[in-house]
Amino acid sequence: RAGPRVVFARVARPHRELERRAAAMSSAGAHRRATVLVGDVHGHRAKLVSLFENLEREIGAERLSTSRVVFLGDLVDRGPETSGVLDFIASLPAVHPSMEVRILGGNHDLGMATFCSLWRVDGGMPPPEGYVARRKEPPLWVDATDKNEHARMHLQGRRWGAFEAGTRNAFDSEATFASFGVDPGDPRRREALLSSLPESHAVLLSSLEFVVELDDVEDDMHPEVNKLIAVHAGLELERPIPEQLEALRERVIQQRWIEALQGRTNVGRPANVGVNVLVASGHHGILKTDGKWLVVDECAGLDERQLAAVVLPERAVVKSH
Image (cartoon, rainbow, N blue to C red; front, side, top):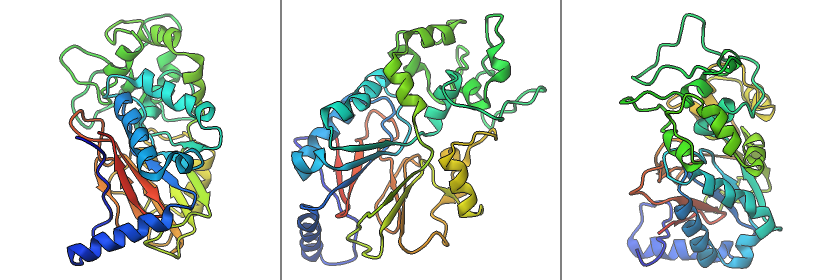
């Protein structure tokens, strides 16, 4: 396409009124600090570069450089350039020293980080009798060396590192191995990946957060909003909010499935979270810009889709080419 397409939340009003309201929202946000919510990048460096170019064009270089940018998780897998994505994000503080960058871990990042032993794990290993997959996937990764690293590895790490010819990996992690020059079929692929992983990438992956909480957030659509809670999949709907936020802040990994990173119908924006709270997520393969649960994952790692970001307070949607 010739340029980015800016989309605003759908409103059941005549076309001209919608255009007027969108223009007013954009103008109103022009001189306020922006909060930029970036959807799941999934190894697509070219789309990420294009998105930032279009963000600079749409909201201005100065406003972008002083914005708060929240990556909503799933930096890795599917796309061909996970290594390049990590390079780009790791370089942002040097390129934009006044930009506040916060980075959520997603379920794919959970897989890679636990496979590489970059996160502390206090439980969640598969049972000795084995793991029954929800759908057909390769057998769990087993260490080919005498170190038996698999015995201490979280279930999602062993799933992420699994490979069997003719069977699709549950995370599409083959593309990530390839981006670091590692054959995913190599029995010693974990050693090879760790040897190829730059220190800056290991540091970035080690620092990923399970929840990002921002105060003083503005939302033109909901003036009562003053707080943002960003979680990759969403907050658990039936779990007490203080309890789950405490666990997310501490990045507790005790269960085999981390619902805030991996859940589907059981996560979102709980009704009792507070009228002043906006929740933002990726993960779900859609772009949802209405209400107080924003879901920014239009790309979903697919080649044919654009990478999207939502800019607050005006709720402008900017996309890659």
